[in-house]
Image 1 (cartoon, rainbow, N blue to C red):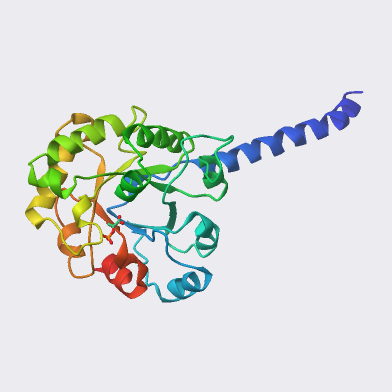
Image 2 (image 1 turned 180 degrees about the vertical axis):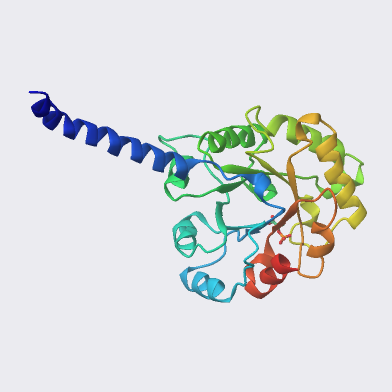
Length: 273
Ligand code: PEP
């Protein structure tokens, strides 16, 4: 009798094992990246550029190091995330934006769930172009970051002052407000990255001095104990000829690169230097 029961129970046991393995595999797949395992981060923000042909040529030419301590993140348009993911080799893929809503009647938006399905690990949030052109505010940055963290995607939260704010001596005040209002309580140094991008330095060829960059990064990390251990990247006219000086600064953990990341020769130099 016992043997017969075992025979009938066999499919049940098998099913439990299958379900358990699926859960283990899925958990492994959705676990967030360990930010502490990297010494520096290089994020390529392609903005609204690139097509299939560009992507093929880019990855044929891009030189990546075997050194896995540098975290390279390529952020193409949403439509190109899948293609860039398929090429994946020693780099991660990031989105440039996400909806703060999980689903529903939000025409044209891209949800965190869709990013998770594509195994996207990072997402830029609150880029100054989104703040200026699409009127995103700190509250939007806050809710998008919560969605991302809940979906095991690392938000790269952008903050930075305009030229007018800099000239009025308001940089620290602006950054404090953006951080206090935009970084959710569920954020911590293990699940969130901050990018300091002075608005006036983006796409202009202008940068703050090396000392100013370090001082501002130090301010971001030290003005509030909760930010002490966050990785803080610098963005704004990073090129092959200034990347090394910037990324070597003690308070800088990497670079967010726009224009220069579109040329694979230049981006290769930025990563390798
Ligand atoms: C950016 O778009 O985030 C950026 C830093 O651009 P660029 O490097 O072109 O200044």
